Length: 254
Ligand SMILES: *[C@@H]1O[C@H](CO)[C@@H](O)[C@H](O)[C@H]1NC(C)=O
Ligand SMILES: *[C@@H]1O[C@H](CO)[C@@H](O)[C@H](O)[C@H]1NC(C)=O
Image 1 (cartoon, rainbow, N blue to C red):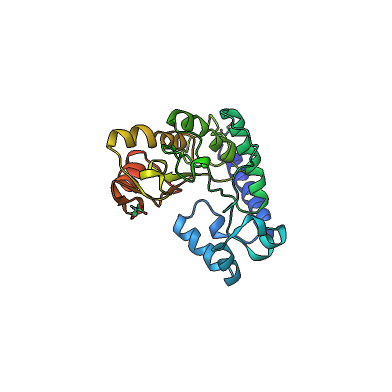
Image 2 (cartoon, rainbow, N blue to C red; image 1 turned 60 degrees about the horizontal axis):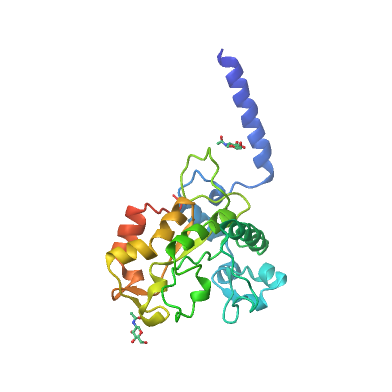
């Protein structure tokens, strides 16, 4: 009874050798290796030009196909002036937003960068905030619905998927829920300023879109430059480590 198993094993082994005969084994491509080992291997293979390119972010107005290809550019910014067209129609349609995510994923993949710094899930509580146009709504319930864009960008989590979240499908891009947290509630709408709020307000208004994003498999979360009750978010152990990582179980990778 053991024979068939053995011969199948040999056959598979031979096939494996045949396949890897063409391509060199790359440790960084091996999902069985620990993340740190893979990173070390990948960095060790990169040229200085690739490292410089990967650390460089350029404006989209200068991001031609040649530039992307020849300089190994790490990221592209839709910066100053990249606001919506004057006649752009607002749409409160999560399914449309999801399909926009699908189209965006396709275009982003074409740059060679499998990652987008979107969506902005700020709940804009003060129209004086200059980045209000990036926010889906002042109503957290609408922002929560619009996190469906993550399913378009990263792909929907298959029903038989057992590894939990984050989840990014093949040929999609990693999304980024930002900016954690309270960026749309700053004092007088001053950008990157201080969000003065009690726990009830923070967890009831600004946090809910993060619950939805994490459930939908978002791969990354960007911490905000703003403060909450006088404490810079980047130094906010309670909210970043205590809440996002420990309570919401947001995990990146491993
Ligand atoms: C999950 O389902 C899809 C679609 O039916 C199938 O192609 C895939 O092989 C399944 N994956 C696992 C791990 O069962
Ligand atoms: C908020 O803005 C005011 C006025 O520009 C500035 O003095 C203050 O330092 C800012 N606070 C934070 C936390 O960024």
